[in-house]
Amino acid sequence: MTSLTDSSPSSTATLLVSCADQRGIVATLAQALFGRGANILDADQHTDPVAGQFFQRIRIDLAELVGDRPALEGVIREVAEQYGMRWSLRYGSRRKRVAVFVSRYDHCLYDLLLRERSGELNGEIALIVSNHPDLEGIARQFEVPYHLLPITKENKASQESKEIDLLRAEQIDLVVLARYMQVLSGTFIAAFPSQIINIHHSFLPAFIGGRPYHQAHERGVKLIGATAHYATTDLDEGPIIEQDVTRASHRDSVADLVRRGRDLERVVLARAVRWHLEDRVLAFGRKTVVFS
Image (cartoon, rainbow, N blue to C red; front, side, top):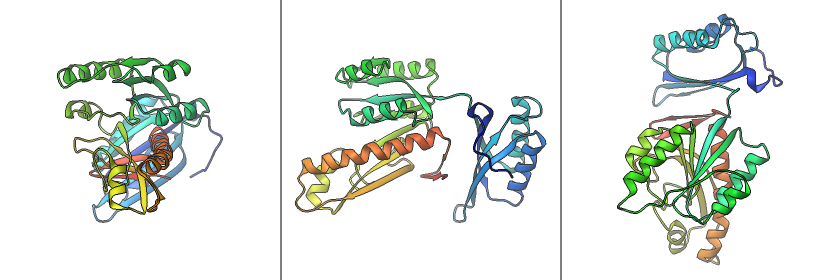
């Protein structure tokens, strides 16, 4: 296996696989790729002995590919059928399209837009969706389309249907809930499995639901945190991608906790989004594997 760092993104691809742990997986997959002229740039793998599951991330160079890309996908599919694999192959020539959902808090939105502008994120923020008009000025500043879809109890289902249609029409690969203060329906979540990242303002599983900083203050905790996770129908219980914490003390007011927590929210969400866009995350059950 060769380690190269100068391959053009347009000629690379990332393969993610997972399956029940068995002998011969690595060798068989590597041989299949080699047979099609796909050069392995780097590979990382993990075996969960408790779950009996195998996970692997392989980044490959396609510059000397024998045949076309469908032929490469065909040999991968054959190996997948042999081992009962779940797999995805993402080509570096296509930047993922991201939709950011927001309400009235702007700190995470600003952070993501600035990181995209600086080239830190391997994706394009294609649109912003909100249930309030407050942040439309930010969208104009960054020249990103802003879609206002107010939500009430009476129109929630119809508005979510419009959102789903919009995301599909825009070929969105990832939905980021950047402090979007709405609970998504099961229908919405099912339409984008493991494609919705939420930032929760506590170190889950502590203080789920609303007002976690107030709950932390009432309990006098010495650490506060933030958690980025995939959204599921179980509120704030989706597979965790990233977390971080900072110390708190008895001298901190709720306002202090909120201010310090927002710094964590920015960083934790950005890490999770970046790793997802780089195809470093595999979700299984209630957990994730995040490849370095």
